[in-house]
Image (cartoon, rainbow, N blue to C red; front, top):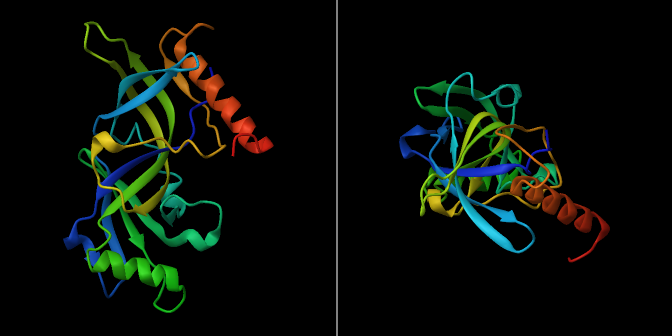
Length: 217
């Protein structure tokens, strides 16, 4: 199987009733499994849209990293510990939603965390985004003209939760293509060397190698 695409992102709004000011915690929904429009490369210069849907169930989502104290970040910044503003205390599946209890540090420990919690508590920052890897995906080809390929993500792993500013519009979601990390991926579909998905993987690998070599910055 080919290596996976880099870490992905999806965004969700914060419910104002889920904020505990005294306890400095926030209970939030990090996924509802909504279908989002993605894009993949065919060859070097053509982009083809497809729809990605996350399966939300206890079997589909690996919560081991979340329940081991996953980081809560500012805008998916992973290059420094100063970007961490909190920690995931607990994550669970409730119906068709993935939920998490987020805890901020005590007041005065970290000024960035204090600012973030104040902005969230005052309902200025209202959106969160989950960073996740895709572990198994089932690909359903488009049957009619005007339809797009369907990617059903049957197993996936959340890695972190971030507070973000971008509107929680499902059609505005983007890949976190700047990271050089890759993850094992199982594709439940026939794959050949000419498959466009393999071309996409090759393209991403080349972009990562160029970044590491300082090319195209």
